[in-house]
Image (cartoon, rainbow, N blue to C red; front, side, top):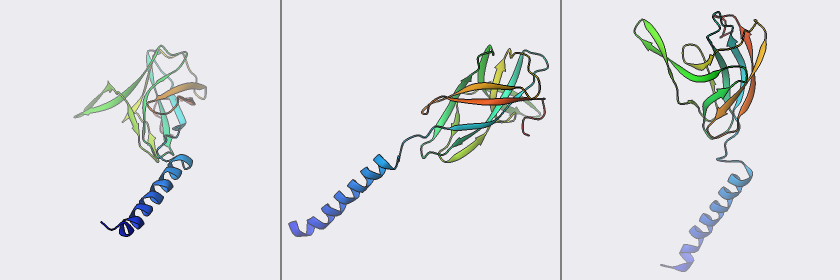
Length: 155
């Protein structure tokens, strides 16, 4: 092979590699951004045995993440759950995680995925409580949810 003919492609490859390394180092390419959470709602429980909480999750980064669970001090237990449709009836099952794609927004809902809060304390409509959401790649996120009457989680 002619050395002179190989020089331009080698130089171009070296320059491309240097530019990609710089972009990855300084442009935060391939690094997860913390998922932002907001618009939290928790249903006021009529029975005191369980209720549900819902959030809007926003991933502004270029790496997907996954909600793996949540915690809340006063509650006995918080479980990530998925609504399952079976004909005219529905039930729920535990969910291992809720994917939050890169550059996307995910809305939790009673018809999809939400947080089952076991043995919640008595809440009044308008009261705010704080949850900690746990993610597979990103840091934990603390977020507030406002207590709402059942049937108004989507408002």
